[in-house]
Image (spheres, rainbow, N blue to C red):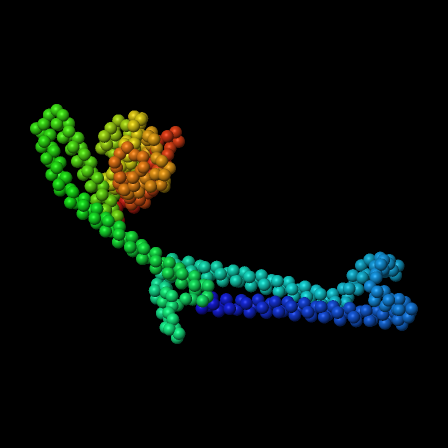
Length: 421
């Protein structure tokens, strides 16, 4: 930091010195041109005057009048007539001091230009180093305490006060650091607040779910006993009530599962299995799943992961497809295996997902505007959490020709052991 400031202060000084040197060289060059011109003119007039005074007077008249007319062409003819080539004037110039000094000035200006170029490159390199240093400090977290740890200024002598109680840096780089540090403090405070809020919300959901589980179990047992002694329409109503009770129980389980996943309380039991077997188990656990869900592709594709949790994840995706596809066509689950992992593409033939809902389809408690069910988006959120814990990805889009398409990519695992995440 200090070296950067010291080098930065040198830049204007070096630049000023180079400009002064170039200005001095230009002045010296102009003075030398004048001296050489005067001496050459005096020498030429003097020699001509010794030989022919009348010609010397005519020459001075031409010089003072400044009219050259066709004198240049006549001069070239005279040089040729006297036995010199058309390069004679150029040769005489090269033999003069003016040529030597001009060549020297050109070299000096080239060197000065190179020096300015080097200075410019150096300045750019200093700027890049400064930016790299800022990035390094940001990534390492050194910027975060800068604002809070900055020394507080003394009270102003006139009784005034600082606007925010902190020293305001004067240099642009320090001001940038200061603003970044304040931004980091604000972001850290907001992140801490959101973490606490999410934790409180999750604890509240878990407590509610646990409180509901016991009375829900009692209701379920009571309904089963009612079924034993009823027939006809009353029995059908009791069966329907029992199904709804089971749905509430599954909803409570999903909420608890989400809480366990986000709290890191899940112990993952990884094993090798065929992905086709898992998808078929998912289909068997869903109503009409065996008849409507078709597994395609590489049926021998194997994966190393937690079977039960992945079964829960894919069951939720397939269940979502069944609920939104009333066409009666097969819901396909296509498998593709490569060295990088397994790709599973699940497609239905329903109305698809609206462009507005598509970015939020995996968000928890998201309610689509147009939906024929009362579900609140817990199943797909749970599926995403499980897949991400396996370092995979899940995405949804509208398939060509209609329907929704879910693509899951699970990376291959080389370490086969039980892990706790």
